[in-house]
Image (cartoon, rainbow, N blue to C red):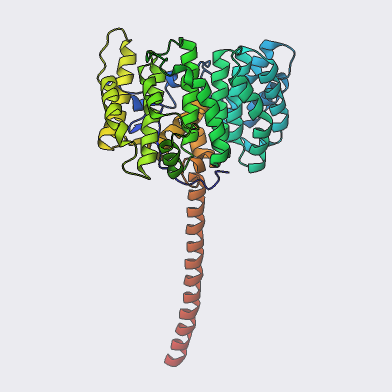
Length: 437
């Protein structure tokens, strides 16, 4: 369990913050890392998900969304397809915007059963929405036994669906995202993670260069699946010790794809694949360099040349926004490869700031944000499990409460000392009066 998670040295990012508050929109001239977790509709909706329309009303108190959640859990097993889809959408909305671990703990088995059935027997949108609930469920629960039970029940069905070519690309992409976060949050054992990473590679290998070294001809939907699988692969990579990674890469172990295969993905005609590949390469380099400063030096020139082309790409056949996002992302990747300088991104929420100063920590944040969407700030502030994962320490209200207790205790001690001094001085004054008389 990652309850006392060590600080990781690798760093991948799928996007988009740079010293900005999550409550501000990105500047048009800013880095791609400036996209906001709270306000970025692109970051939320580009995953193929419906916009929830913002947070639920909280003014009516706790009972309103509890009642809505209970009804949605019941409806998740309804005979009507649309009723089940609506139920999963409602559950997603509530779990995103509210941290309610005790409430969920009492109903997790019912919810897990409904999710398992919908992913196994459902189709398309139903499978995608059911898979979306899984990382939210893990984030709500903070017990090792609970998360292990989730893995035992849901990992096999998620993996089977992600690899099923008869299933829709969107549902498979959501299953990859769920599998990545489920394994990331539950384990840091390379023995558990490497086989799952190999399964992800079997999916995103569809965007490798073809045998004649020409780019993959995968379509838009397939490319979205490949980028999701590569992002999930990179998330698990952040859990692999840097020494183990260097050994695997240098030994050409089949458990890790070759750097040249990943470099070939930079030629993909699809933006999301190019960006995922570039950031994954930066993550691999950062992790390896922390163990061996000469790691992959023989590949470095080719990587620098490839990323420089993408950082200065001005091809008119690409959409203007795509060119802008690509150039901003690959400027950071190219600078890291050439100068060993990682971008530092500050995420402001409430009175606190989360500093993302490695590619690994940034990629972990982005994957969690893609799951939580508009509710990221709520969980950063209130969710102790998530704060532990991102190394934020104790919750602010706990720190303030401890501070108030310390102040109250100090005040009590001072008051007691003052009372004791007053009594002593009073006795001395009485003695002085007796002498004078």
